[in-house]
Amino acid sequence: GARRFTVGLGKKVLLANSIGALWDAELAAQSAGTLTVVGGWLGIAAFGFQIYFDFSGYSDMAIGLGRMFGFRFLENFNYPYVSRSVTEFWRRWHISLSTWFRDFVFMRFTRWCMRRHLVHGRLRTAQVAFMVDMLVMGLWHGIAPCYIAYGAYHGLLLAITEWMRKKSRFYRAHRHQAWFRVGLRFVTLQLVIFGFAIFSGQVEVALGGVLNG
Image (cartoon, rainbow, N blue to C red):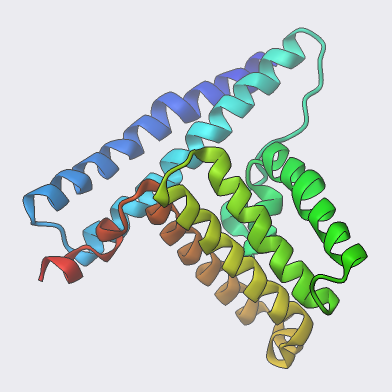
């Protein structure tokens, strides 16, 4: 327990805080009008990793403290940035939160739609349920345009991923090939990182030098 607590503390103090300094530097560059495209994406990536190490760190600290007192808490982060799809990302990211929304929003809304035949077809029902689930999750973070946009963005990504999984012949034909899995991991990470730009309300930082001219 003490070892796990120390790892979590290190994530928060040594990694999250240090990486956050790069994010602050790019925000300052944006304000000064000197931000580049590369700098903007580095800043957004730094923000994404700062959030991960911060959240994962406090989860490790809670798990470690629990073990010290004889409790076993479930894992809350499972290497989310190696995910091959946005669906897998949400199975690995903030597991306690995403699982709660899956059980009490996504599944219940899906059953409600199917009982009342509001949406035709299982695929469309799942896509609509993903949109509702993510919009509610966005509102859970706060009533602000950036959070609503973040939820809508991930809801759309999940709906597209579900379509690919069910309907795309290319996806199904290549999903087990090594080169395709590497490509999926890269694309998923970029989509997730851009999502954090929306979440922070700093999309212009991700676009960087494009907006600066």
